[in-house]
Length: 352
Ligand SMILES: [Zn+2]
Ligand SMILES: [Zn+2]
Image 1 (cartoon, rainbow, N blue to C red):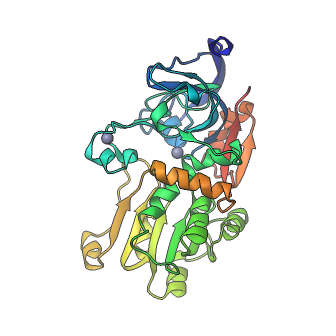
Image 2 (tube, rainbow, N blue to C red):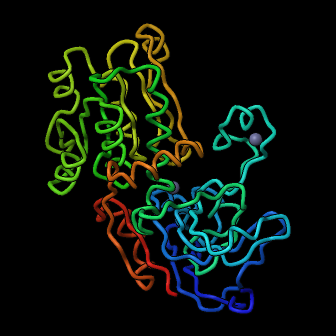
Image 3 (cartoon, rainbow, N blue to C red):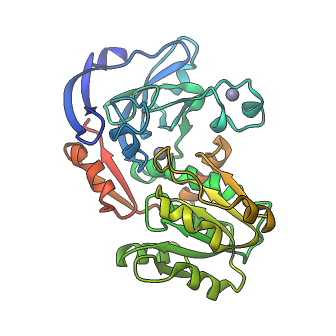
């Protein structure tokens, strides 16, 4: 098979990260060479995560090839990897690999390993034709789930499965959860999971008619437009004492600012959104204690949650809303995401 693999390939490359960043399509990017525990994947498509905004604006150190929701076919295996993986359809996620030995990995939460390496951060991402992945951390994509449907599940879906998973032992079916950013790539999958799988009563918060429609179709009982309505007053009116929990998805200061006022005493706040690193949680320590609030951070999810999610997609329970773009449109896509111009998740087709 290896003779079919070219030496160079097309990739979308971030240049000059910061306020004047550019994403440029290049044809001369070397194809990676898988190491002993790695595989080479020929990509079919990739989802584009909102967190790529952090990469292009240089809010941290990222790889110049972004993307961490890649679906493709294994075309080459490293020395220690079973050749039975060749030809299999796999997903490449944010978690490139983890140490597998620390206490966190041993508990089954490699996604929280302090030594983890990330796709599109420490190693090149999935906006290219061929990507190298660690064979132990890829996800097998079930037949019957299309590439474009599977891609957004790898980060957006998994992130919401991880976030809502923190509430499994805390909330009962019929309890209220507020999901802010409900019409976005992550939010709408979170609404589907919360309403259809966890049987929670979902109050969706976002803005505009398209996001209202997507949130309600995804299973939200109520939609509140934060630009035209008083979110806190509406939530209190609906729930009496406040919601049992809120999942804060947008990476904005405002979304975190109101979170504690949306939940009742002993309520749960799950922090998912990734604002600029200097933005801190605006919450009174005294009120946090007096109201017995739980604040939890959540970053993607476990491999078990990934497998469950793909199964739910296969059964048609989880149906991500996607907007598919050609590779040539990749340079403008991050701007569109920043302008909030995508409903659901952007998925880019990778040229054959
Ligand atoms: Zn992501
Ligand atoms: Zn570890």
